[in-house]
Length: 398
Image (cartoon, rainbow, N blue to C red; front, side):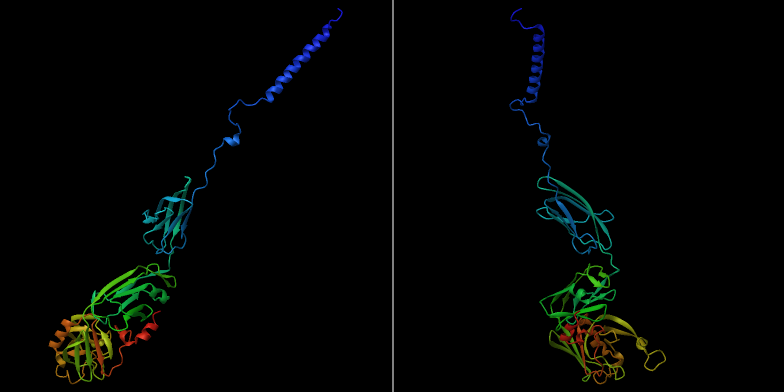
């Protein structure tokens, strides 16, 4: 028919239209936008932000720890919420946390040669936690040294030195002395002096003042005494100084004057050591007193059967040296007292004077011997400390 489209052409047009519709539909789907108000679907944007790390916890010291040195646990960048330190037996070690919670410190000494467990929890300001389990190992010395203190009594005379005697020879004497502190009330100048490799003594420049209180504090635990030896424990001692009792025994006059706080209160006839056994000169300090002592000449080499041998019980004895010198009752020499020196080195008194002396003189009181014809009392002969001038005494403090 004139002006009409052929049937085949219509069919081809229908197919092209369908293809175009499908293509437009696909294009529309690829370019479509999310509805208004829809969230961003990006996976990275959806994850929560990571917390910063927890506090850095340190334990100091941790290896070869001196047991007298406090151990410190510190939280850097946070605060501690719990610290538990235990010894090998599981016993807890006492400690204190600082007010800001950043540090925990032990409150008690540890033991030598032990490994301790430390469990710590801490938290940062953002809430991030830290949990740490660590160990602390203390040094294990070759040996530990104990120390004994003299006097062993709390009431002494003005001549009494302080003595610290170690169980082994001390290599680092300076370290040992630095660990020892003496305080006196009223204050008095004094110094340490090494008598031997194991004994160090302290005395004032002059006799103690009557009525003084003297205290020794020795922080020896953990002190390196040299040669891989450490102090086993601290020492503490306090004593009171009573009235100043000083006896002045003059071998030339054969008499002894007694002074109480500087005032002459009594004079006694005496007999000192004979020319064969002269009494040491110098300041002697009473180190012991006994109602009776068996004296035996064999202790200084005069044996049974030899001329001058004796062994007898002597009464009212006060030791003034370890060389066998005493102040004591000597009824057998009353006839020579005041005229001749006939003893074996002791200060012989009549029974009545010996009783008076025994009642008034005690540990630490002083007997000064002059004109006896004997050598000076050695510094090592207990207590010969006063034989050394104080300037020389100070020079050997370490």
